[in-house]
Structure formats: structure tokens, C-alpha cells
Image (tube, rainbow, N blue to C red; front, side, top):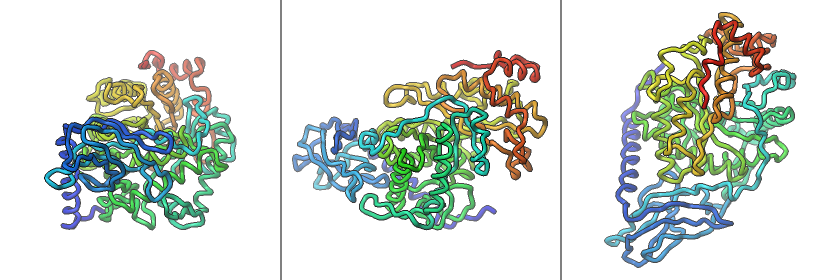
Length: 517
């Protein structure tokens, strides 16, 4: 049931919006001082830029700031004479004075007052201080969300999948104890029993040669520290926005990121190559709840938390890849009060990230059909077009996403097009197993013919009873673990004989409906 917001809650939301606008105004006003990079070099951080602003004391002061700080807040970490803008200072990784998660801003004395005179930049190469560089298990794009009760079966090996995703709930691992982790001068506790479950999953999948992707979900645990302050109003949601908006949240998020990155970097607990941060986060009401009426503010709060996790994970495993998560709503949300379109959200997220130091984020998307229960993904429709104004992105038009990512302003720091993982997509067999088999075949062909796609994850190995009630029997196995027709077609995905059979069942040449990128 929807609850009414209190006056205090509304006031907090308004204050957060004002703070966001003020921070943006600070950056725009600082045209004469510009920081361009913050890079780890050995055990030092080197921040560079240009500055024609003069400080009344003859010295430019570099402040290290937490994600939630702005203006002249923070601690001074270095100085440079007026007219220069190169600063060097210790990284201090895993100490109480760590600068790994800080942003850096030039402060000058003006009219006797310390005043921020530049933009802010974060460290953009956390992998340079990585404790581990675990070998990746990159292989084919074929993947699946495995059934936990079937991990000891041989279905995944038989299917020939190269990738698997698995949900990791932060509320579960941070509630309870048994594992103490020393990080940044504090002791953090993690639930030993729950963590051991994830260890088992990672090791079991690795033993089958399968690359593991953990999806980091912010469920409502016993400790609300990781829940964003604008998501603590009692509204029920599946998952909640991550908290980088205050000291307690930012510090705990950093500890979680470091712990996970270290544990799953071939240290005896299994290796996790990829991390997806959240689930369909543009769907802010249901899947990443936070009070927000402005996509820019919302994306900025997600970006702050994302960067903490990115720096923490990659500072432990240099080879880890970290993904933003969106759904199939593209140019606009179906209900603006509950959803942002993936495109406007990603645009705002990318603008914010670039403004404070571009990093190598990747994208995960869920290109489900519309409506979800309709498996026919091979027949052209009006709602999925090959235009950036398309309402939705499905397997018919995933080129819309990769074309978007190919724009100059969307490229990675190295100038590459960011890879796209189709991390959840499934097709129901409610209306017949043939249609599901055709849909799986066509989805694989589309993914395999787009060079920017790094994974296609079928959303269920086995049917879930709760989803069947909704018409979503999307497993390749039924509830009794019996293989459906789609199981055989996914096992042989890309085989010309199976493509021909699927085309005959569809009454259309599926290869003629492929968009190559």
C-alpha cells in the first residue's frame, strides 16, 4: 500500500535537490581552474589540471572530499604554488586516511575565505593498486541464470553455457557475523553462513568453466546504513537505492566493495569476473527505490554509489568489470512517476561520471518482449523500432542500445564502445514450447551478430512457480527439471540445422531478420 510522505520527508527531498543544484553551480562557476585527471602512480595519487586563479596566500590547496561533500568541505591533502595545478600525495590504501574513494577539488583563499575554484575529479584507475589480477573466464556469449537447487546437476555443462549470473543480496551478507574484515581502520562484520553460500555458487560454476557475474542487490536488511536516506520513508520496494549520501553509508559501501572484490579474486572462494550494480535501476519505484522527481538528481546519487563499488572492486581485482543495470524501457518510462527511460537515465549517469572522471563502466540490459509473456520476438512491431525514439528495446532492436553506446560522448576512457551484457531475457512456453524455442534461437542470433554484446543470459534454467502464475514459464526446464524444446535449441544455438528448424516453425527466415553491428 502506498504511504503518504511526511512533511519532514518532503523537506529532506527538497534539500537534497537544492544541494545537487548548488554543487553543479559550483562546478560551472570555476571556469578558470580545471582538473583533468586523478591517477594512481605507485603508492601516490597525482592530480593534474590547469589553474589561472590566484589564492590570497600564494598557495592553491587541494582538498580530498567524500562523495557527499561539496564546496570547500573536506581535508587538505596537497598544495601547489599559484599558477600551477599539479598535486601529488599518498594514496593510503586501506588506512583511515585512504584517498581511494575521495574526489579532489582546488580550494583558494578569496576574500579571506577558503573557496572551491575548480571542478572535482575522482581517481579513475583504481586497478593500478589492485591486490589481485585474477584471470578472467571470457568465452562465448551463451549464458543462463542457474537454479540453485540444480548446481550439482550437469545441465549447464550439457547446454554449453559460458556465463552465469547470480543474485547477491547485501542485506543478507551484512546482517549477522562470523567474518571480520579489517578495512580503512575499522572492523566490518559479514555473515559467514550466507557468504559461504555464495562461495559455493562461485566455486561450483568456476569448476565447470563458467564465468560468474554477481548482481549486487540492495535489499532491506536489519541495518539501514546502505539504504539511501531518500529511500527510508517506509515505502515497500523490492530493492533500494544505495547510500553514498552520508559518511556511514559511503564507508560501509567501500568496505563491502573491497571485501567482495578480494574474496572473489581467485583467493580460494571462487572468482567473480563481473559485477552488476542493481537491477533495472531506471525503474526507481520498484527495483531501485528512491524519492525523486528529477532524473539528473537520481542518476547522480546512483553514480556516486556506483563509483565507490567500482573503485573498491577494481582495487582488489584489476580484471573485474562493473556494469550499470537497466530494463527494456528506452526513450521514456511507461509511467513517469515510477520509471525513467533507460536512455535519459544513462545519458544523465554518463554526464555525471564524465564530469568527475570517466571510468570503464559497462552496461547490462533486460531486453524482454512487450508484453513480457509474449514470446514472439522475431516479428517486427511498432513498439520496438530501430530508432533512438523507440519506446522499448527488445531482441529485435538491440542495435538501438549499441548505437547509443557508440556515440563519441558515450565511449570509454580508451575510446572503445562499452560492452553490453543482455543479462536477463526470457520467453514463456505457456502458449507452446515451439514459440519459446524459436524465440531463444532468434535471441541468440541477434546477440551473436552484434560485436558489442558480451553476453546473453537466459533468465531461468528452470521454471519458477511464482512466475508461471503470471504467464512467465521462462525456464529451459519445467518445474520437474524436464528439458523443454527450447533447451535443445539453446544447446545448439547458432547451429544452421537448428536455425533452419526454428525458421520453419516461425514461417520466416530468422537470419533475414538479424541486424548486424
